[in-house]
Length: 285
Image (cartoon, rainbow, N blue to C red; front, side):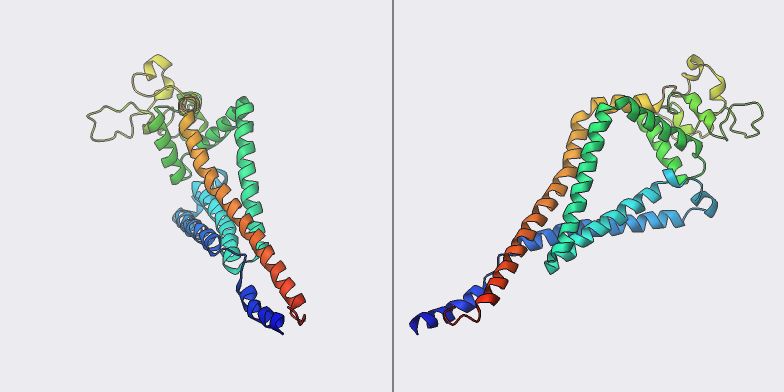
């Protein structure tokens, strides 16, 4: 009888015991909650930017539209972090595994993309050239894209993809004789050399620059293309890029680790509950 009484006293303690650590559970929850809110902001900003565009411009260049990219990334992040939030809060193994697998796939894709970009640098450069040329073609079709190109050309002191004459690919800046545009043979104002004391931007400073040779045009605009400038900047800032890549990888690895730890704890808890149910009918339990 004494043994059974001792067993009865120990039973509530055994049932109160839990393998699931509240620290791991709520740390994973708040970790996902932060990125979940960020994803909602990204989607909202992307949708707002998309709706603010004219209908004809909105359908002009979906492939290079920054608003579309923001929406896609935001929706993907929303789905993944939603699984992490609900999975950790409800201790749902299925949602936690979905969260962990998605993060692992994204991490591996980033790793593979980085390795392939380094190994096949020539092909990566060709792909970048294709993207830049496509952006030049649609320069006037999308205000967000236009601002992005202007910002890049100012920051890198460059013009066009390979050279300033790449702007002939744009229908407005095309330098053929039959082009009726008033911007024929011109380049965007962001290609122009800016004086330090210049207070008012001359948006017509690139007028007719494509008709000049490199030496003549070099007195007024940047003649070097942005692709070479971008490659040189990457080579000069490898440590910075490595730090950014590490900063992106660490949260992903933390999320994967925490989710797997919590999944293992939940499985141990399920085994404990199953064990208790099996032995609950035992008089000596």
